[in-house]
Image: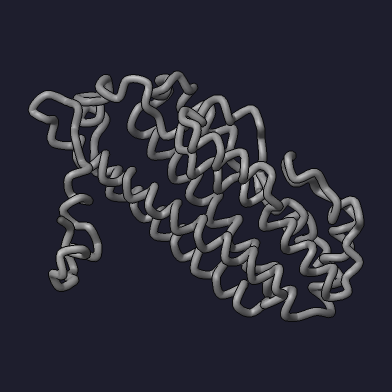
Length: 267
């Protein structure tokens, strides 16, 4: 019987499920190899942060739908702070040398960070949607349903543009009625609207800058990730059949909020 049901007092350990949490690090290597525990913990922590980021971005979308601009901006700032923590975790992972990683890498078999369903959810939520990745990460019915839901749900960018329209800005209909199943596309008319927002709507311009911060934070995490992988395995193929560094390099320099970057030279 659990502490919750037995009438036992709630403790730090029972509230946070510490015993269960600490039982989830199960190395596959013989011995096991010393550094495999670090590898497991780092990636489990990333998944926890992804869960929190999704939680926060869902809340930011809710706030934008309610036109609560200040609160939405504050939520986006929290997400950026989480990204900074995620980037700093690379420093810990990089204390593991290539030889130390290779001592257990073959035990990972087909497992790969490329298969992180939550990271794909995050990309979809930010507006970077590709239906073709579903078959690569949706290995269970539950995961497939989550990804299908994210693919069909309006993105953070969509919620932001709808919010701007309700504030009286002339967001083009083609942006407001864009297909939710495809990635956000740059729009020159929307860029003209954004330039005017920066010039005449200070609070909305500040919200724009929080989105730029968020985009930059994601790009920084991608960069540190690719350099960590390059430092650890070089140009070897990644686990799970991915191309490793080659694939990760292709993701760099691709902002999710392209319109906000396109207007920089006009401000």
